[in-house]
Length: 451
Image (cartoon, rainbow, N blue to C red; front, side, top):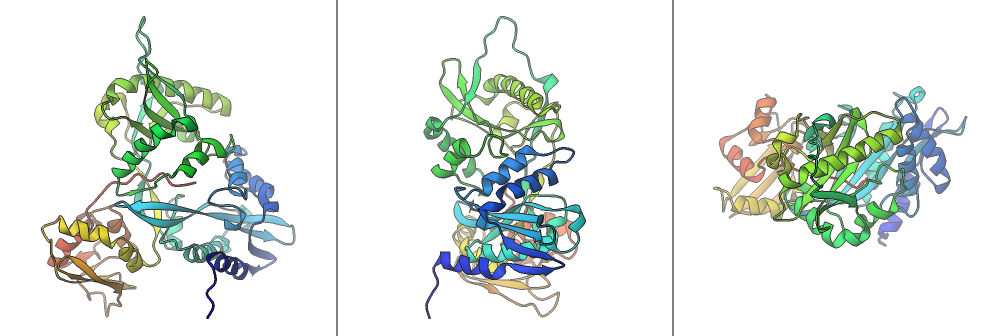
């Protein structure tokens, strides 16, 4: 039997997943000719009280055939054939993340939206069906999405990673430079020439997290030079320099002024550089940038929001500079085949066990998820088998989690003890409790996904 190439498989998927939804509605993948109609649709739909040029420009970018990860063939849309108007859409952005340093492939659905008159007809569900199938055909282990509360749980997603969170500083409290003093640090725009300096800093930040999104050269070049000026992804990356002009770090602001806040999503300095010494200058420069961005968008801004997660060295170095601690939101995560993902990250699980009091463990653990389950067999600290398993009843197995809740343990979002406290139907026998704690300790992640 002849095996189709990867490209041929994806072409087959696209051809066979387009469908007539009835009532004059047709679901298909986009073509380059759809770029501007989609940009207008998304700009109006996601504009709150005004047309959102950032979203429109971003849509034009992801619809470009030159886009490094998306392009029109990864954009689904629903058209009303009676009016020839787009009424619903979403896209799929392939990317690579890491789990304890192990790369895994991810498909990110984004820019999801349906015109108000066409909601509650299952259009988003139909598009998820085709994009999930395409994502699987592309070899993605996981799908992820950011978005409105609860909604994406309907499609097999669970909150399993922190999103944003950090500290806020009110602009009125940013310390002023003392009279007669010169600024000890300053910001300047990052260029491609700065990449040899910046890349190791970002890589070091990624090494601090359980789950991260690495950036190869092509992705850095895309972020700095490819996206259109008005796109959401066209962030004004800045190099932090000392008074002698020597680079000591970098910072990445976010131009979306949600909640009157100017977001900062990345901040890193070289080893030996005091964050406490640099931060007053950095915050003064960011305040100036925030006010200029607000004026350009005809909006107001009152805070600097350092969206750096629950933990970051700057929060320890200069806690007095921050006045508010917003709780994180969450990444929605979908893992259609949990045993397959566990097999993929098996080296990390074996390494954790080897460092634990259960080193050299031999035995079996069956995880009951009520509607399905899986089992792991261990032999002297090595995984022998990871496979699906069907529980006979709700008490079968060695531990149990309500559907999808295991993902929160798997990705370090919550500890087993926390989940057992939150969910009365989450339980574990004594040996399983010890083993799961060794395999899946709580761990922080800071994922800046490819958008």
